[in-house]
Length: 298
Image 1: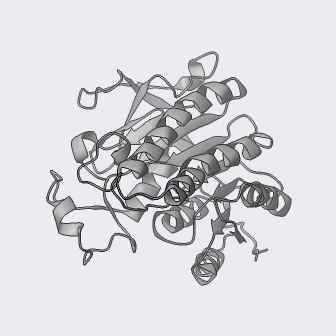
Image 2: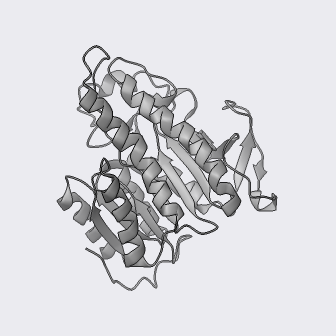
Image 3: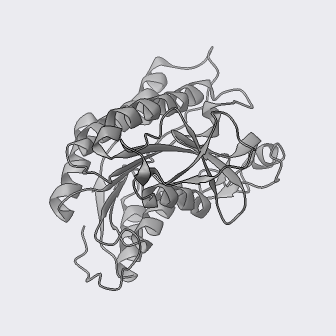
């Protein structure tokens, strides 16, 4: 369903823009949808098994004066992913921001893992990202933004049963760096946000592993979906790729601001570590990848 609500009161940095968030019916995806709508974008969200939650997100955005659309799309289905992009473009007249958030986690150690679960994890967590970017790239113009949602598990795995999940998120991180190079000549940036443990309905405080995971973190708390949404909001605002330059894997040294609009060609976000200091005063690694240093979550 779509909204035709007048949006003259939407004055954020994305006013007049269109964003598609896959897996946007709950958790981090829903928080991203609400944040980008608040920033002024018309927002489309995909869902697979939670139509009522997706429509609730749409209604909330509409009630705040925005425009929103819910599209059913199983990310394991190539045709459905392509259709989600096409429907977004048809409904809102284009697409400016793509957020690949949809993902699944099937636990299991290598000696017990089924090939069916392996194939579905790869299809949803990796192939769908490629397909969505490929389809959106046909419509994205200069200034377009692609933001993938990865995981810190791409870099380190703290407990058994998530090896396949970590592999898929490492693949997304690598794919992001390559896509950034592919699309940089067109003025389109590609970033990967890698959250640490984040409190959502899939990872509630009363969950069986919550305390174990949180106690491994220096800050002794999980992140929130709204904090991750804030990180997604940051690179989509970067004019021409505004960034903080740093050296790869350097997560602690202070960095200076560089306005990439002065670079020619536009500064690609691959092969660099971009450091963004947010109002929580926690350094984030981005540039290809936005992650928290040494397990700190945001």
